[in-house]
Amino acid sequence: MGRVTTRRRVLRITADGASPRPDTIAVEEPFEMRVGGHALSVTMRTPGADIDLVHGSLFTEGLIRSRDDVSGVRYCNGVDAAGLNTYNVVDVELAEGIAIPEREHRRTVVNSACGVCGKTAAEDIARRSQFSQLSDELSVSATAMSTMPHALRQGQRAFDSTGGLHAAALFTADGALLVLREDVGRHNAVDKVLGWAVREDRLPLSDTVLIVSSRASFELVQKAAMAGVPILGAVSAPSSLAVDLANETGMTLLGFLRGESMNVYTHPDRVKSGN
Image 1 (tube, helix red, strand yellow):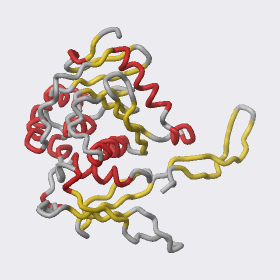
Image 2: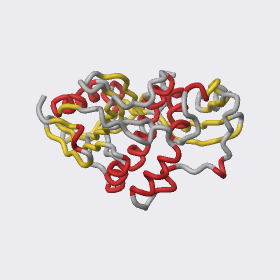
Image 3: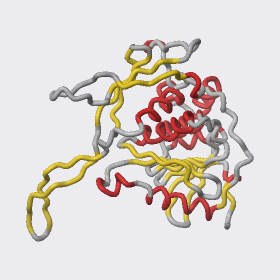
């Protein structure tokens, strides 16, 4: 939709004084997802790659298993004060035989596992995911891993303008970039990337590395595990529950990916020293 950034007037204060100036900031707007005309969820997101976001969100919550489970996605007539379509409401049509989820019966992995051990969450993912057994075949050199955050940063066009967007990207084992998405929400950025994979029929992502520009939270590990991602790397730190869940699901989790240094928190056998 082209509404990733917008301009606002700010008062710029420096040691030399203060002056008004325009500033570019990231757009954040509500995004409502409906399934079969029934409201399912509302999230705050940066417009762009909305169809990827829809597929990724439905997939990581276990509501669909492949692109074939979605027969159509259309924008609804949500309008602003000027009568213009905001493109902030979508209605999803599921394929024949795919049940429309009832909101009161939906049970996300995040809610069920929040505050408990990684083992409980891992068992929940195993029940819900078709890719609960992560591949042990992928290995990545530390040198290749060290190049991925730089490639991620180089692809963050909206961040260059605003300084206010997270990013997620999928890479091959040798460091080739497959897809990159940005969003104000790090979970949305991951859903957009995984939604791309769903739409491209690339699941499971057993031969890829997922890199995020933020810290590694429990929720990001959960989403990666649902898609069969064996290696997740974060520019910043992981949380304790993220480490626990990665350990239980068999995922290699890295943090503080900066330059040639990194911390490998779980299942280090997939990361090889040197080239």
